[in-house]
Image (cartoon, rainbow, N blue to C red; front, side, top):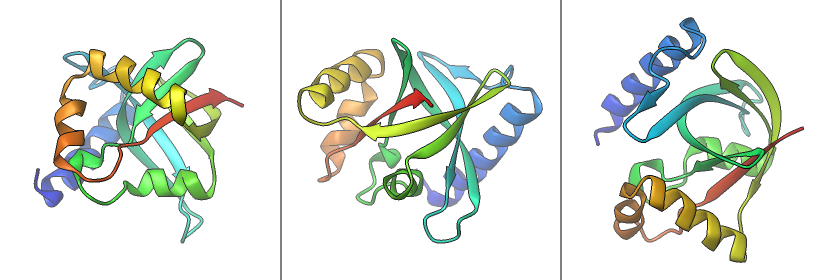
Length: 139
């Protein structure tokens, strides 16, 4: 997808989610959306984006697919630098800590997310990097 279109869509989507307290544009087909706030690794400023997520027990799972691009998403790189973040779901905002799934946890969660959203499989086929799966736990 065109980078400019993605950027515009992300800003508009974030604005609508914030303005509606998560009641509008919070789902599409088999995905739900939240607002993810990370701290910029270079600027130290907060950055908020809308992103698809899955509930998994008490945790929230987000796939760092970055639209199948070769480079990692900025939010992912921010979390690698500082795993503290905020999630906004249906108007509630709460603190979380992010960890990257590894080993058997990764395999299990990759199966979990691809069963719920099969396009992730084609995303993985389009990029040489392994698409990370991030686990967010309330802090």
